[in-house]
Amino acid sequence: MNENPIDVRDWIDKQKISRYQFYVLFLGFMIIFIDGYDTAVMGFIIPSLNQQWQLTPGHAGMILGAAMLGVALGAIAAGGLADRFGRKKILLSAMALVSVMSVTGAFSTTPSQLAAFRFLSGLGLGAVMPICVTLVAEFVPSRRKSTVMTAMYSGFSLGSGGAGLLAAWMLQHFHWGSLLLIGGLIPALLLLLLLLTLSESPMYLWRRAADHKQLCHVLNRMGGCFDHRFTVREYPFFNDKSTFSALFSSGYSKKTLVLWLTYLFGLFTIYLLNGWMPNSLRQGGFSLTETAWVASGFQLGGIFGCLVIGYLMDKTSAAKMVSVFYLVGATILFGAFVLDKQFMTLLVLIFLSGIFINGAQTGMQSIAPATYPTAFRATGVSCMHGIGRIGAIASSSMGGVLLYAFPGESSLYCFLATSALIASLLIINLNTTIQLITERQVSK
Image (cartoon, rainbow, N blue to C red; front, top):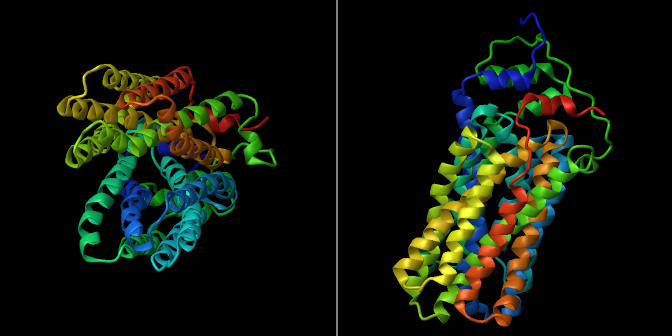
């Protein structure tokens, strides 16, 4: 039994990363992998639906838009629930929703049915990512947080790429619904693993302070040696009735707006590039093979960016490093705007832009949970994801308007560079607090 009350955050920060914490990181990686798969898979299914259902552009937009709207709403709603009822409960519920709706969607017979199921699946998917980010961030020491979080988030790019490789083979041999079946069965298997082996966040258990036995069990899995009679330092009193209003309390309103807008412009850049660059390349005279290579280069670059930026963020100012990555990415995209667009030149530039733009966006997954205390951390992370999705949705409609008003493939890279530059300028002066004092400033 410990003689002095322990501060849970301080204890985690002083410990080596245990095997169980690495296991939690692996679970988080798999959750994000599934998120990446589900996000990308419909893009490969739509061409098959065009043949089977003779989809109009309006029907295709309805199916894709329904999922994105669901993701935005699910992300915004999930944070408050996770701060109130626990990270694990909401994460498991969201995973179950994704699994059931993906399987059900595989048997859709009309575009309206599929859109409805994709919306409901999007609700779960929108909740999964920010709650997963919050939970894993509360398991790892602050000194390694950025490295761990960005490594975990690399699963998104691998999931997106895996969806393309799997679709290329399966659509030649099976019905398009098979891809949604896989997108539902894998989360179901992972859900069972999470239910049996994943512990609730130690930081959430500390704040609730209702079950010392459960907190003791979690800390012991992380390398501690406590019995259930151990005592912890009292968590600061949190007197806001609404965790959402706490995002705009003293000291947090500016940070909240900066996170929202930076993430919004970052997602606008990524989705504008992914959604409109292939069409722009085809209009510019590139072959289907060349277009596929260039588009894949952005995703592959993102994997490298995820691994590099986390290490750098742990060595220097996290916000400034994210700003630098956005800025370098913007410069590279501007280079694509002014340079002669030969295939190899563009492939290299888009690959490099993928390293920096995707890397910067991934870095936001470390900054957001570090900005808020446990009492409303899930709400803060979830709202950033939800508001940011507005940028993803806007890229679908605004991209077409912008390219219609300013025709020519070069204009796309100018818009991309401008959006990334705005994100860089927004985040550069953000003062994030990754220290224990964050937890002690909750009281008013």
